[in-house]
Image (cartoon, rainbow, N blue to C red; front, side, top):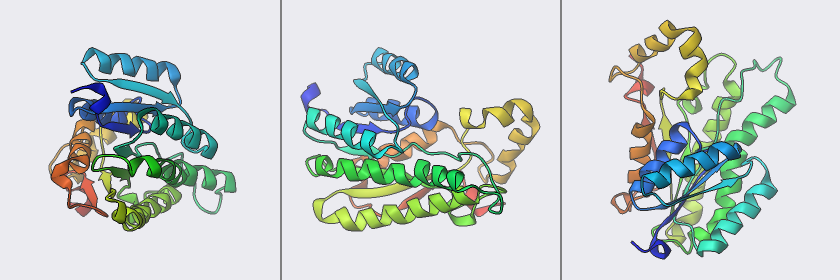
Length: 254
């Protein structure tokens, strides 16, 4: 496929974990992948890894919680290629833990910015270029915490992810007339560096997590990447405003 004909996918938070697995999968699907992150050295290394596998990739370093940085970088990408075909709002995270009584306004705003503002800023900036894309779509990330309000100290994380769930549906309504589909994935417990601390300090606790998963194992980044691959593909052409649980049945509890 001629590079000028390739579909363009922008994946935020893509220098490790699920984001990098998504970048690799979409690259193998034939996309030109644009990786975002805030660790430039790591980003450059990831691009080299993908290129060794014959994947066309680039890295753009910017903070997804910074409105100006998001707008300028997404515009640069969109103007360079004349379109964007897929936006994967992968960046996000717990941001720490705090009970509400002790929660600072700064902490509250930082968690909401990381999970909600980032998806809003990136999606808004990309819409003009998605309109020029081929069967374009946006993929957001929510969480079980968006339904169960999260574990101890993760209440504002759960709140932010519940907001992403609604944002997904609202964007789907708003963009349907342009043929832009908007869906979300809700990963369960995925074996990534996100859990490295507890994996190294309390391996027995980490190992026990699979006991709450119906399929009896932790998820792998590739499990999420394969669902994202499906959602941005023509096979999902009649799916929008949906959230797919990727957790081996964890959401139901056992």
